[in-house]
Length: 109
Image (cartoon, one colour):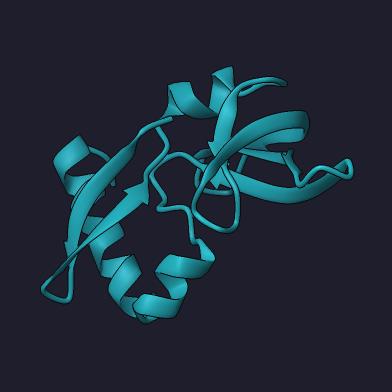
C-alpha cells in the first residue's frame, strides 16, 4: 500500500488511502499501515467485509516490536487511514474534507 501526499488546511500530509484492491489483497506478510503511520508486516487478517454503504474493509494485526507484540488496525476502501501523527496534526473534520476530495478525484462517492 502506498502513501499519497495531499493538502490539508494548507499543509502537505502523507496519507494512506486504500483502494478496493488494497483491501481485498491484504494478507499475512503484506505491509499495511499501523496506528503510528508506518508500514508494518501483517500478522493476521481477522475480518473482511462490506460496510452498510458497500465499501470493503479489513481488520488486521500487524507485528510491533521485538517481543512478539501486535497492534490491531483496520482499513476501508476510500477512507484515509487515521493514524496518531495525522490525527494529532489535523482536526477530524479537516481529514474528512480531504477524504471527500480524494474520493472525488478517484471517481468514488
